[in-house]
Picture 1: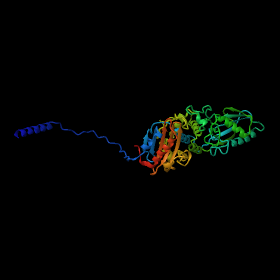
Picture 2 (picture 1 turned 45 degrees about the vertical axis):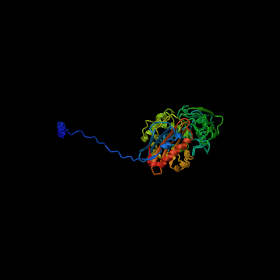
Picture 3 (picture 1 turned 180 degrees about the horizontal axis):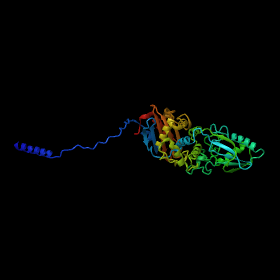
Picture 4 (picture 1 turned 45 degrees about the horizontal axis):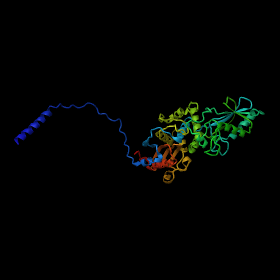
Length: 437
């Protein structure tokens, strides 16, 4: 025991010696960094839609959903990746047009006196709604018969007894030959969904002017000339192409205001209206109205809305080209501004189809999805390899959700629309409790 005590004492003595030999610590003078501000807590959201997003009918899926009241991103599934939009792109075209063309602007078609005796010039101003009948597809459209009647009356006053022998067709607001994008499928023209994009045309180029879907003309400029001559009672006249040079204006008719044209475009997803408006946006922003100019003109016209346009790749105005690429998050952010009515964007909101009620959504949101009828206000899109949907959900809990869905894959079928309706309905039910997990 004595031995053990002595040994233990030695150990403690050694420890004591070791401690007493350590250097005395000094206080650090470096100040600890402090956060500039403490971020607000984000509450835990529990309403998941992941199982719905996994529906194979939706693949490959791009989704962005944002609380429009707080700007919180609720779902981001490839939301910042630029991808094809389908006809959702028409919303961007409408916003661009409202900014640079103006909501009250009307597109005109004119007739001016020619530089030679017996010659008049029919001048296109980019209005595809000019109608050959009183019951055409475009509500409130100007009639070529009214243009012809007024033009002939003034011509005969100026040139009594001089017959009209030549009608010059002026479609030079942009190049008449620049009328079809190489990335578009010609079947869209044959099947009646899209026309050649010319500044002078009648009835949107339709064979049947009363129908939304009708085979489109391969000579829309010539059709306009022949329709004018028939309405004016002129037979045996010669048609030539050219540009009006000076000359007294004989008559003019104007379209509905841009605000009305936008509603017609968005409700029925009218491609030719979208393309003509995009060309006029180009002209108004200082470009030449060419198809290639749209890549710069449309983003330039959207700058006013304060969004980051760096991810936009614009090929056309209608969304028919699969080469358009816009991040879903950009579309959702634009939808927030549309819902808030910034800078006349409320015109777009009031023009969008409503689930189960109007436009291209009239026949959708059925069965279990009928609960969201009237609550989803959105633009539809469709290409051979894509279905898209983007807009606003006025959710069950009173929150407002801006969203954009793209489903892109080869072999996609129309049942993807139902799957997207189901996803939008889930956003309606979840509201601000929508989870990204």
